[in-house]
Image (cartoon, rainbow, N blue to C red; front, side, top):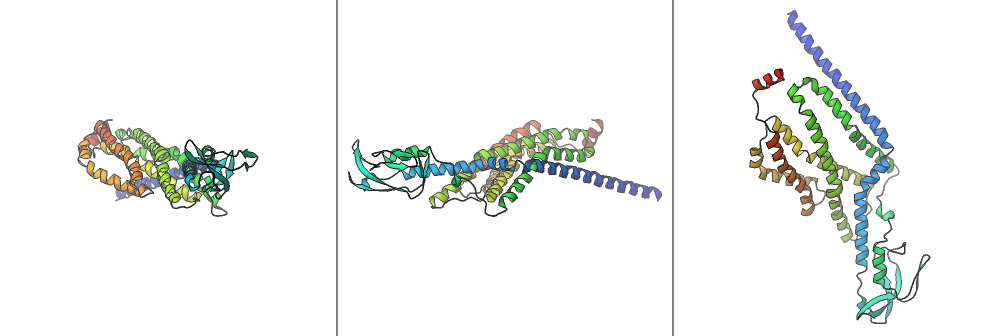
Length: 352
């Protein structure tokens, strides 16, 4: 009876020791996130400006397209020698000076190279600059395409008084977690390592490396390819609808972070395949057999992750996932092992 009580007490102490170890590792992890949060808070403005580059580039590109479209005026609306008013349907830039939407100038229709063309009727004073008479409107618009001013129309907006503070706190939290991930993974390893066999510990370094590398690849792909493509499509719809884009900075941050994290997780297909192959649960034959099912599943995941409804952006999201799936077949073929019996695992654990 006393022996049974001693065994129960030993088990209870062992369980409490595990809880104490877990508590210690959690405290270390929270402290590391807190320190990283403070560090990132001071740089949150720079981090947000870096994240805002894709959408600001797309806004600038759309303004250039609008400005180019503004130049597509039909000179035949005026007869040769006739004078009229030219209306700037979009903002443009003349010698570094922004010309607001709705500005009008007097023009006349002249014939050059057997074609009618609109030119300035008289001198046009723009700021401290003087545009000579007879200057073609098409030339003014063409030069303005490369002089678009990066002004308030290209920036994101904040809708509340404390919006900037909340946004920076939000950014610092995400960035702090990302910065503290190596320390967090070390705490996870320190907690689970005592319960692993020696041969199982050899899997940790490749798994951690693959997880980090492929997550970074996913984030880079989201930032450089997937998100700009989605922005171009979504903002293009707003331009076609005649809307002026005022993008909320907090909503934008939530969207880009969701896409970066989502694609970072999706890019873990090779890592998961490697783990399942090493423990004998996945084989190349199995992956080849179910590749059609994988394509359907990838299409569904792409539809969920894609913030648009068009097929092009869905393909942009799905293509790297398909490549990673077929890459994973090679990883499984190279690193895969047959599933061992329980007796073989015990023998391996005690001898290695």
